[in-house]
Image (cartoon, rainbow, N blue to C red; front, side, top):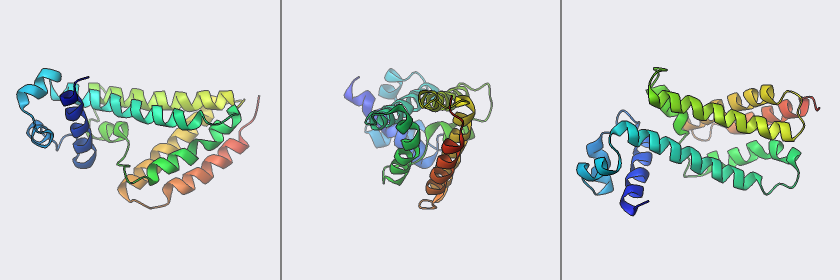
Length: 186
């Protein structure tokens, strides 16, 4: 990937997360990135394509980070228990500015919109990731627990995004431990 393309993606990601996707125009992106519209459209044929690539990159970066953290656990059963420890670490980081798929789905509520569809897909994929962790920990209803934990994750992240330091993740972490410990084993 060219350095300029990467800079446009990084700039757009930051602006979308801090100013909103619909509130961020292409003129603003190119001004902050120090490039031109022609260059932006050379790499991304439309703003929609740019948005989709930003969402994909952000989700991939988060997933890579989280998997790296969880891979340090020796036992599969530890991974599901540590999930919210790492989410709390991430949300507490000064770099935390929210979850792209949550913000994008709010700004693009039409279920037929490709941006909403990608956001919905990313939410499902994260829930499937949690389900896999639960299955590896021998949880009987891995999909049910994954749905519960993903609801806690999305709600706590949204609350922290709206009011930093609210304690939402800390309480979501406590609720997650209760749900995990109460889930039946196979």
